[in-house]
Length: 186
Image 1 (cartoon, rainbow, N blue to C red):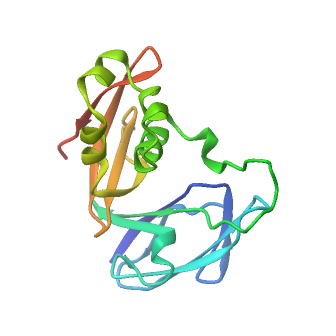
Image 2 (tube, one colour):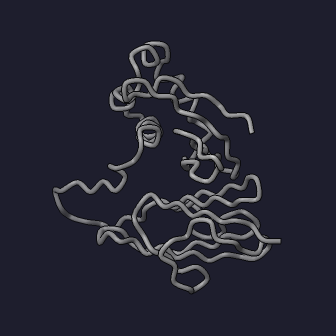
């Protein structure tokens, strides 16, 4: 049986999939029981390449550099950047172009609540405390935009747990800010 594999990096990259070059690694079919070796080759000089081995829907190498979850006959693999040591005063932020929900997730995980609150509507920000924000995202280790559903859902993201479970949420916006977060029942 084949499964549709979707690889989503947090950075621009090309890939080696079991040693074969691929410019895009989104939505290819692969044998469900087969191990998959993914080498991410970042297109930014300050990031380092690395390889992860995925088998039985779990990362078996470089586990901290990826998150994996499976749903509806699809396998989602989120790749995180691997940084080199750079001695420069310039700040390199590969995820600067990240979406509003992705930035909120990152700021809450970093405990940077002033920046997180700048992404929330006034009513949502006033109705939720820092502890509640932390608790809401506590079980999740990664976030993947749902570009895969047909028809595509607007502002829908899978929040992924450490054990590979993904829960779909919609991030409603008003005036360019997050106004509500709703769990989607599949």
